[in-house]
Image: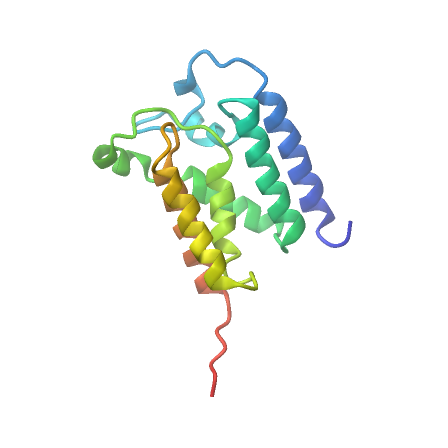
Length: 169
């Protein structure tokens, strides 16, 4: 299993948890989702609930792939969660009509996508694909592309502030 065993075990547990949790019927998404003026529990719970099993498996797979491929520490995972749950949905909700509850682990995943920007080998190629994924999210209904964009940019800023720059002489 190599390095970061605790983190890898933790994300396997999280992936299983969100997948199993997606099998349960949620009658009122506003009780577990994030939206403009949502209660505090919804803000902290929304990453763990998913609209369906496919949604949960896709998000869980992305999280697993990131943690098993890159050197992602427990603190980076925790920071990604904090950034995702701290989205200024009340401010953005006023301008963007974010009244529909959003659920899913994709906010955390997009923060991690942004945070590995300096670690990928083909940086320009990676950024173009991320622009494509975020852009395509704006075309699909029931996809909170604004959350994806916010989380990715936050992770990207974090990466840029924490990666060394090599100056060519």
